[in-house]
Image (tube, rainbow, N blue to C red; front, side, top):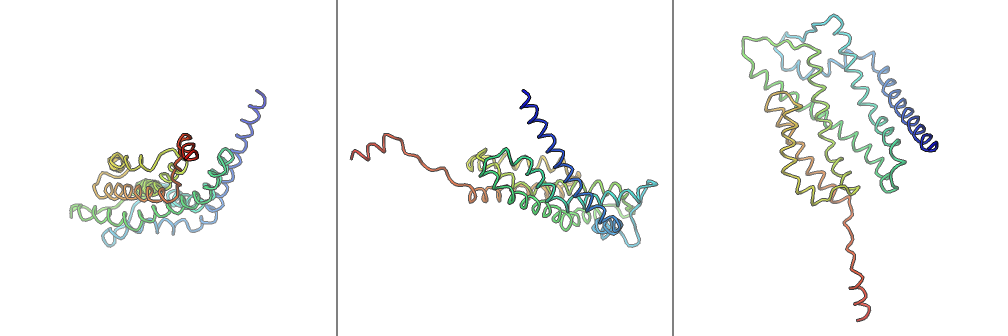
Length: 254
């Protein structure tokens, strides 16, 4: 009983150390970027500012909002930049409990997850935001002058960043499930109709109530699921056919 308790405590200590290292990495990047917090927010707000009428600006309704919103944006950017360290610490914690062939997935998994998450955010920033904001600006009545609140804008873009970043992780999840043998390639193919329906349901929940953003989240999710199936087919070894003992004995007798 004491050995079990010692093992449990040692795991908790290691988990604490891994979390502290990840937090320190985020804090270091945050401190380095803090002098440019205002410029970072201006870059984030650029897609919205490009669709506003000339001379119109975003507003801040709170007293401390002009300070805290750029700080939150800088913290988000710091987490994204420190994401490889965070993912590595998470993998280093669970790796000792895995088999050797599963541990070899560590580095490709960390790199692939980081790159895909960043690609999802980039797709959202450069393509989705411009399309959605232009659609909203064209649909709005001419008698309205839009002046978005910076805090609501931050909440909106963070929701979409997280949604598209996680959506682009679909190939990693599919490959990982197939690699560890949890799901076969045939089962993944059979699940296509359910994945399509689930993608549109998820898009309807996490995106704003407009058809454009829902469609732009659901379609990439379905396409990335197909990419995951293709990658899983190349990265997983097919099961070797084993002949029954009786057939092998018959061959020897003949």
